[in-house]
Amino acid sequence: MSSKFTWFGHAALGLETGGYKLLVDPFISGNPAAKTAADQLEADYILLSHGHGDHVGDTLEIARRTGATVISNFEIATWLEKKGVKSHGQHLGGGFKHPFGYLKLTLAIHGSALPDGSYGGNPAGFLLTTLDGHKIYMACDTGLFGDMQLIGDEGIDLAVLPIGDNYTMGPADALRAVKLLRPRHVIPVHYNTWELIAQDPQAWASQVQAQTNAQVHVLPPGGSFTLG
Ligand code: NI
Ligand code: MN
Image (cartoon, rainbow, N blue to C red; front, side, top):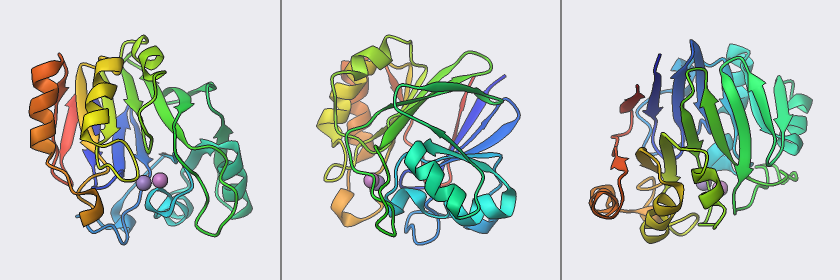
């Protein structure tokens, strides 16, 4: 069994794992980096890390069209239910055995107000243990924090980390994050969407590979990586 990742640009991800289709933070419409149309995307589940517009994106439309269940924090899950979207609320540190694997919400240092100004609870990252036992950590929007060491202790196969700076970790802190997390594979995200978060991912990849044992996969928007 394997898990296939697709990067749609910014922080929007597709993940096919255990026979299920997941989307993470599906901001497609209005995403200058996206090469896909939101109405082309299929999903059984949507993981939503926090309430900001560049993450909520097309969540409502895709969930209504596909019938996907949206997994987020309790506050956002309640907001979604009021809008007629099927949701599953969890919270930081809590895990649940979903059909596609065991998903735990992790700490993230960031904000989470929803696009309409509603309270969006605390932002989260995701730690997924796939059905075949791989551990995938998606930090989502966050600054560097020391407890990444604890997440790393779980044995991370793939870490998806922001490197854009300004709103999240920049390249230097993302390199420190790799040292704490000790993943086998890394994919950088949340950069080059706008000038404000322009970064050179190849330069970052060279630094990471010189200073850690992690293998970095720089994907073009629409590009995929398969974790075997
Ligand atoms: Ni954000
Ligand atoms: Mn963001």
